[in-house]
Amino acid sequence: MNNPNKSSLIRPIAATIGALFIAILSMMSGTDRIIAENGLAKAPFLGGKAAGAYSTALSRAGDRTGAIVAAEQFVRTDPIDPAATAILGSTLLTDGQDEAAQRAFRVAGQLGWRQVSVQLYWLATALALNDTNIAQQRLDALMRLDVNNEQVNSALQQLEATPEGRRALAGLLVQDPPWMPRFLADAGHLKPDELVTRERTIALARKQGADLDCGSLSRGVFYLISRKYIKEAKQLWQSGCGSDSSKFINDGDFEQSTPEEKNPFTWNFPKEAGIEASVEPAPRPLSGHALKIKSTLSVRKVGAYQILYLSPGGYRLSWQSWSQGRAPDFSIIPQVICNQSRREATDPATTISNDDLTSSLIFHVPNADCAIQTFSIVKQAAGFGQNDTGWVDKIAITPAP
Image 1 (tube, rainbow, N blue to C red):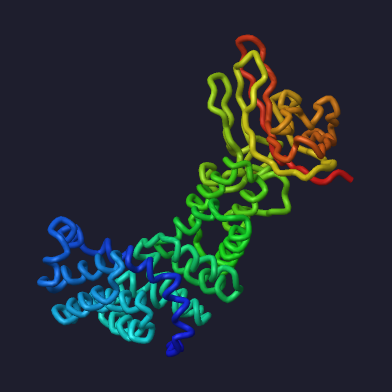
Image 2: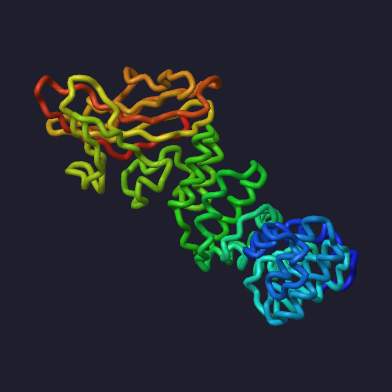
């Protein structure tokens, strides 16, 4: 990295991370509590970490000169402890002695990189100099230490704002770092513009061969869904774990292998006595896998459903269905419901049979009260005391001609 030697380059760093260092250092040693209980007057007679804790306490109290003296005492009594030069660096930085602070942090870095304040300093320095390589190294180290604070999150956003930064982060994700679950799950909590750049980073990592944790990504997606951001949720899922984004319905042929509990946009199977729905090898004349729905109920019930995000306009819905002695099986009724108005966009009465297995209908998504839809597969009531089983497969939604 090109080392900064000008105060004009380092001074902005002090404004953004100086106070943060004090907060972090106050948690590094339990000796602050001893100082608080016994009074600051006794602390100058202590060396080592006690002197470091005293320096931190003086910094919090606004005594910069005293803090520097105590930090120097820490360095003299324990010169090989990287925490000593790290505390000295932070006190010098908050006092405006930027070049002296840099020298202290350089020594601290040589003694041990696990010091959070050292990592934060060089991260901020790299970002100030637009040194993406060093910035991603320091950020990776901090996140491996499970540091989760405003500066780390801000650094992530700054890196993700540029193509070079996104490439660097994607390269880290390919290495399967321990912070991947947090990185993916947190995406659902980002602001809209930050979410877009996070999606780009995730998509790039996927393209580079990263084995993304879809379970963690789904937590971020479910959070967006809970806040009614369905479009954004679907885009986030598609960036890392989704399949063909050109399809309006997910896994309409029931051949995907993604575990359903990890995919927010795949099929959901309501658990209710009297009706069972499961994906199984399809009987002839169907092929591959299909959805089997078995009902003993005297009322119609939903066997499976999934969330849709269809823009207003006309669509063609087609599907294959079969039951012993019935092809197509008209006891199986696909339907699209507008979530806001609870009105059905599809009309089963308009269903036509295209061949011995395939049925289709045309439906329209209105402009109002239908931004989010639910696609359901409904099984008609079985006869009293009967067990009625049907199969459905090859469900597709396409724009109407």
